[in-house]
Image (cartoon, rainbow, N blue to C red; front, side, top):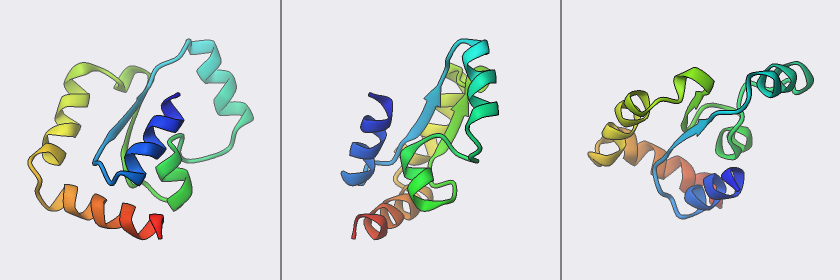
Length: 90
């Protein structure tokens, strides 16, 4: 559901941060089987980092809130993300 949720947020042009936590062995195995720089659909579609991805140990409340605050402030960061989402949607 997380991939679908990120895609729906992108289509709604809603600024976001993506966080994923999984069992350590699953993460280790996935990193060896899947060769990609990104895990979220918006970043995979763009081929670059559009949304911040916080994985495993990085996916903590403090880190998530620090990454979200600039987006909630409706500043340059959230406007740039919104514009890029609009371009991808076309």
